[in-house]
Amino acid sequence: MGEKVEKSADGPRYYRLSEIEEQNSFKSTWIIIHNKVYDVTKFLEEHPGGEEVLREQAGGNATESFEDVGHSTDAREMASSMVIGELHPDDRHKIAAPVDTLVTTVKEETSWWSNWLIPALAATIVTLMYRMYVTESE
Image (cartoon, rainbow, N blue to C red; front, top):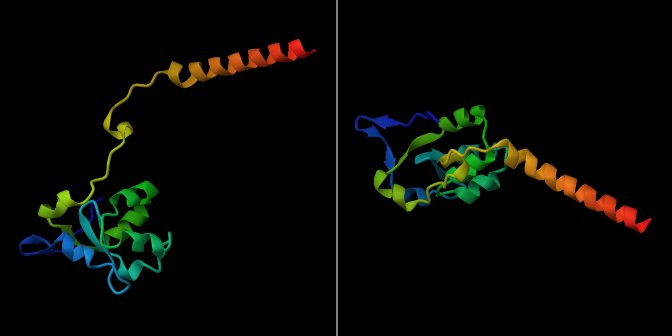
């Protein structure tokens, strides 16, 4: 996503998961997206999806929710301005990693027959059965 992370002389600012989990109030609301820590406190009231969706994710991993919504490029750029650091590497295994679907992890070769021929045959069979039923009842 290309977010900028505040860097000190030693590199990015790291936060422990326990620190982030404590930031789940109206005074301070932090979320984690792709191991980056976002302070969304000032954005709660402006969030187009409502503040409730951010509050539900407060102090935790919002990666899957963020990606499921399909945020625009503009939204991602706006989010990048809220990055305050990164989740400490030692704590990254503690949060549920987003699960990739088979569609994104397995390159599946689909053929035209599975997408068109099978439904077309099913429709033809249903049509023939309907016509036979109508003919019998006359």
